[in-house]
Amino acid sequence: MDIEALTLFVQLAELGSMTKVAVAQNSIQSAVSRRVTALERECGAHLFYRTVLKSLHPR
Image (cartoon, rainbow, N blue to C red; front, side, top):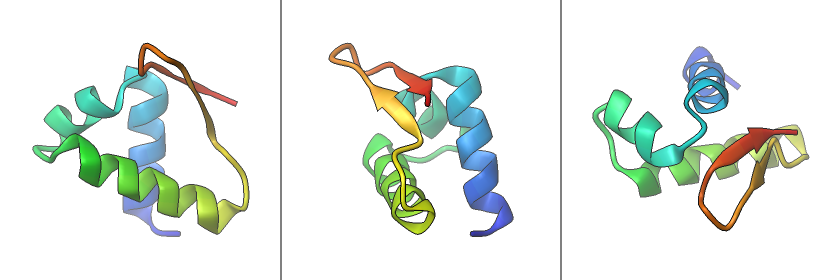
């Protein structure tokens, strides 16, 4: 885990949307999603509840 992964986690918790984080980081949603999945695998747990409306809530 590095500082970029932690920054991503904080931004996602604050903004509640991978798309909003992607815009904030000048990236694309799929890249953010892959990074979140990698972080969750590294931690060995799901870090966010994913909803049908694609909003995220910290666990």
